[in-house]
Length: 194
Image 1: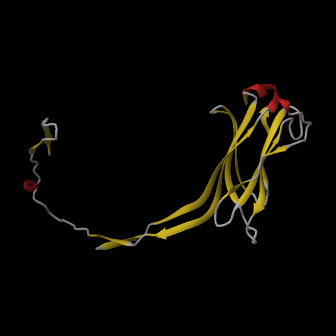
Image 2: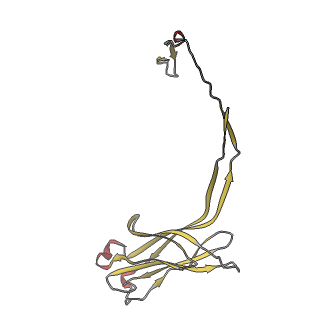
């Protein structure tokens, strides 16, 4: 007889999430130069300690006048102890009404690199596609890794037994067919053969 000891475990990533919407009214009145930015109000992802972020929009681009640049920037924490790591997964989207016109994903450690986004987020020649009623709306989802939670399930021992037959009687090898009748709730008969 042989036995196998089977062990199963799971690990779950625990995270905190925030969904943030920033609308800039009267967008057509904005007159900026390349490298000038507009910052959103500060927002936070709440956890044991708050992690603060802002969105940074460069209407004429950060480095060139061909594209709008958009970034998510980490502003710090309300905790006295600064984190060693701050792994975040984020999606930043430009909306026209409820439609996503452009988006980018960021997955990085914001302690090592506090700003993430795209220099070439959206072409300036297509700016009318993200302006709705003279407003520009940016939506940002931020998910902050909080911890790993692991659990080991109880061990299971499975016993296997093997029998060796040196001779057998061919008359034992027979097949039989039986018919069973099942009546479901709608009273339609189902016939099954085994």
